[in-house]
Length: 374
Image 1: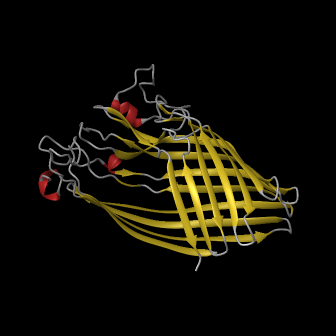
Image 2: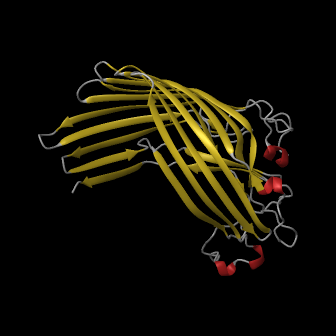
Image 3: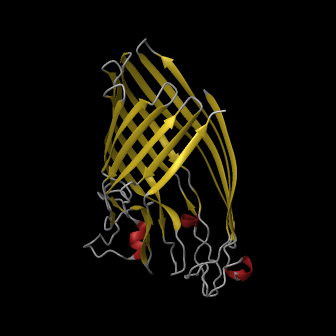
């Protein structure tokens, strides 16, 4: 298998910083291009050109053992410009993946894999302004940020048991992560300065995932999933943004910015799901089903400081439908218990203010979906 990928994108940042109020209310005019002060706009553009070739080859070593190799070569160029000048970031990288599959029999498989991944680096727009509100050029160590890379190892097993009525899969994984990309305050930033991207230390993530589907009867199907994850920053990893913000007092967090051993933000130690579905026939032409799913996750830290958390949550989804060979109608309810919860949040740390910005999850939603096959 061989493939080719190419893209050409353009990102424009042309807003005006400093607005603290709402974009529009009954007592204020909306913000329009004509109302933005010409000397305060960002006028920042980043153009990205990316080309990649990728492929996979699978080789049977024996009747039971199969070796596969995959690779992706990417060539990328990013051109950035703002009122302080023009800048170019170029990078090329080759990332492989190797796997071994061993078939114990037609219904049992064990496997192992090794893979490298990368999130490309790039260019930061200038964000700091002087007393006259003119942009100040960023130094090279802040103008550019490097790639975010990881190496992952996985072993697992996939099985069909009891004449195919039970599927049981399990996997153990270990991820070695380096140069994580995070948002930090630029040197010399002010209270109206936005953040830039920088690379932060290293982390490891290890865990186990189990999933199973069981056809209890010809009509009733059960499924289950469990993921246990331990994701922590490596020893002596330093958080640059905590140091620059000057937030730590050696009680809540270390004043030298050392976050070694802390849990990665937005990472749950436990995630799980269970489901049940009943399928039946109304007559020879019509089928029906009813399904319930319950999913949960443990709390997540919002920053590398490990101070605030998004609480754990459990959500219930329901779905039922009727179908024929040509059409189907389904009634669904998401978050059936109308749980109020924060789905995600991000953390802003600066010498001027600290902010946790939550995103609320959807409350109960009820809908009807219909499909017709022509």
